[in-house]
Image (cartoon, rainbow, N blue to C red; front, side):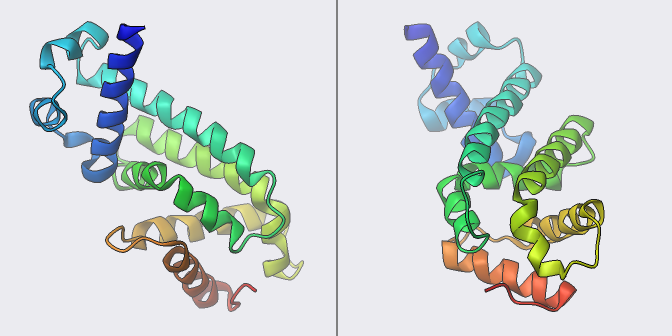
Length: 180
């Protein structure tokens, strides 16, 4: 039980650190900031790369929970952004994956999760495109919109309303509609 508790503490702390600073965070600084004995790190992880692999697995678990919630949505806005706010640390982690897509694993995880989530949201997204595009074309375009949203997302004053207004601005600028 103690092993799992300490392991979870390392994962939670490192997940938040990665979300804020990307993959170049210092293990020494993380241990000091969180008061986790650095010696325990090597009990659970061979090295930082091993930790990052486990962080990606943790992100996958959170994405599964996120998907369970978005499957129940009846409307895209505000529902999606209320859920995203609930998972804001995961959203920030996901933004770091986009910022570091030059790293193959990050690129693959970022794109795969976006494709999965957009496929689930497709019935709610389609009405904004007026029925002129195929499902595949809508998904491809919405992936581009998602990249733009993550690129511009600022966490200094994150709120549901801010995320919605950013999404509406991007959608209006690209497809000429403001979702209602």
